[in-house]
Length: 390
Image (tube, rainbow, N blue to C red; front, side):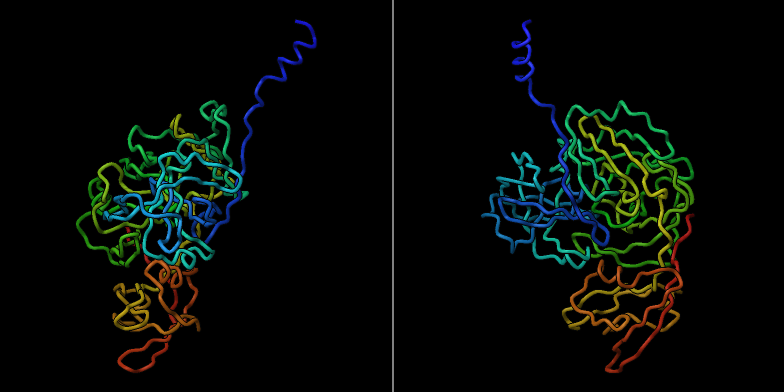
């Protein structure tokens, strides 16, 4: 071929696809990305546990409702209106929004929960057809070209791991988790779960990790549909998605799961230690442990579950765990919490209150309480409130 013709032939070849980077920020326990939905600028919490595209506060106008959808959280289902998504941008990355809808729900206090501005949720559908890297280390998404194949990588199983998705769940990433007794759970990779890992009491009973005994320490935890009773357990040894983990703390919901497929999810507390590449089409997930750890220091608790009450017009103690620091100090149910460490409280929910009341083991929290028209002050030391398996 003449040289000039060869040069023209080369010039006609398409340029190789390039990776696209989209920065995100890390809130209290979540990934937050700036986006445009139907040309409306919004900030969204990235939640792979939500199978859809977008959830937005219904005060944000992105168009008229075009349908409805059934939403499911850990324990319940609920109905909500939807709006057709005609365009979706993440930074300078254009997402193919064909068939996507945005769910519009009642206002939620996302910004307070994540300690940064947030208008709603971005779900798994947005990245499902992309080879997506969640780079916690550099706080950015990397959308890789389709030619990148992580199945060709060789993990060292010390710092890098290659996990295989189970052949189940069309809208989630289900993988095996091996328990100390050798039994296996099916847990989903869930960036929207703010805890380390979450399953259900009946699931633990099924695999022989829990009897019919009542947990010593319990609390109330907020899920999308409301509040549910839960408790913490210490899991002395496990393999989460093939990654060895010692002495992790899991949240256990004291209600059956709303899903017949999965047993729960692995959340932000575990995932934040890894750079994660998701190739859903090839059904593989690559984990690179950049922090050198897979668990956090233990969290101290007071034993108080509290939330805002319309009838009391204040933050009310809904539950006090028996034998907890709060119970020993004399905190009682229906006490109204006026302040924590001098901070006035208003309109906080279960999740927000739990974050405020938790802290390092051995640290102390000061509470001002109103009870029967009297003001009482307490100083409570946070302790590790864990239920042992068995």
